[in-house]
Image (cartoon, rainbow, N blue to C red):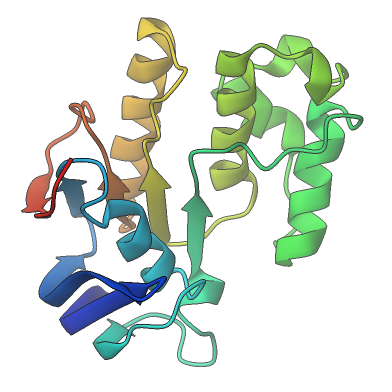
Length: 200
């Protein structure tokens, strides 16, 4: 499996964010997208996820499920945690499973893997920022998809949470998945770097 972009140009609000960008990542590989604020890191992830349309260029996934689009084979984890505050941690995962069309899974195991099994029945509104981030990470495990698109994935995580997430990413890569992550700091895994330009 290989995800690639060729000559990708992004224009938002009448402003060219970046142009002529090439990138690629294959099974078992991680690509760390770095650069100053406003350089287009989040825009690139949103383009890959199908949330934005490139002005020019192409983005393609080779070797995935032929009948599924790239968006249907990717998880996009933005910097805001997409959680319903009135639902429990367990209910939030069940919502995402149904919404994303995932296979039957053990939600409890996904919560345990992210250190949240003790908070399974707590409403998301009562979780700390770090716990909400862990719950978002649990979604990556609850609905299996080969492509992880991560925007500042370690934001709000303490040292223990970052170590735990590094292990989850290594497992994902070891199982043939690929990761593209926008980050200002180290991911805790081996990754090639794609440096974006632009002004801070």
